[in-house]
Length: 117
Image (cartoon, rainbow, N blue to C red; front, side):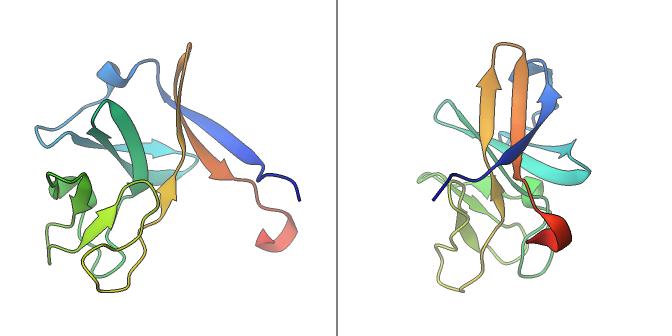
């Protein structure tokens, strides 16, 4: 079985060029999608712009002490690495791989075949 094919989209020349908020998150666009970026322990994570529960803007939330992103509306928590809901409600936050390259910061989207398969 082969690995997933990815389409990579550059979002900035350096992470410092992004408009980071005090909560260490920002909103960006890549591949026609609006995404949230978050910084935690020298790592950058990319995930959905809105919470899958009630569409809270994830960048308006916060990152807790354990590195979970917390939705501002109902305080649902998500693992930024895999999107798993860690507060027990059963939702899943879409996450995207991030690569810091010599020429910039990139977000990856899984390449889809014909009809999305």
